[in-house]
Amino acid sequence: MGGAIHWSSSLTKSLRYLARESATNAWRLIEANDTGRYSHWLAALQLADRNGAISDNELLVFFDGMQQLGVQLNTTITVPGRTETLLRAQQLDDFCAGVDIQFSLQLVEAQGGSFVGTKLRGVCEAAGLQLQDDGCFHALSATGTTEYRVKNSSAEIFTVDNLRSLATNAIVLVLDVPRVADGAAFDRMVGTARQLERGLGGKLVDAQRAALADELILGIRNKIAELQKVMHGADMAPGGLLATKLFN
Image (tube, rainbow, N blue to C red; front, side, top):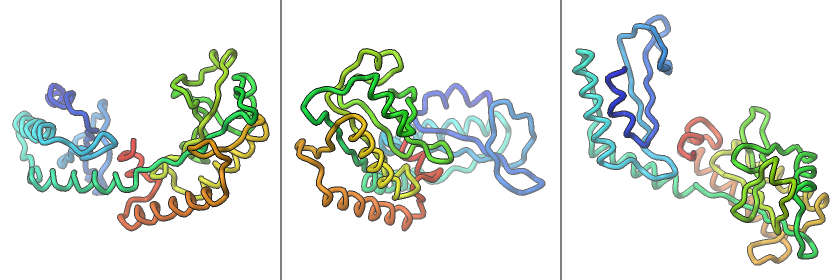
């Protein structure tokens, strides 16, 4: 695959190679250091992600590169129709845009003051949240994937070092709907929000800084169920491998 490197490095969408095992007739992902010999190969290029659908120019780079690879390997390369592929990519991007929604809950200090970083960290960790490299506290599922996260309302991220001196006016709990398998994750996020509210002396508020109403929570819960039903109807399991790749 070395001959493919000079063009594939210019792609912005994910590219993976798979090969069919003769013993099982199953396709398997091929890593860079694979030493096996295979008669059938598949190159899979992601057509859409959160940056949009693949462009015509990028698709041409991929198609041309695959033809070059076929010549180098003295083998036949079959590629799909360019117009059909671009249309499929746009349809996929349009569908994703309709379900790509994040819901958030904001927690402010009840008296209008600030949350102290050291206390914030302690309360978050007591709630089972883990600080990760993106500067947010994450609630992880049993499989280690993020169900929801807690971030600073300002641009400054949380780190072990700055939490020693940081003070913030508000924190935000965020649920990424397409990336969670279980709609009940929102209920767990609300439960964590209430725990942080008590531990920090805070107040859950809406976008207008009014106390968060139960009706709004119910509305969000219903909307999440609606969006995940749409995803299941399109054979795209929320929180599944396909959804995780598309909504990355």
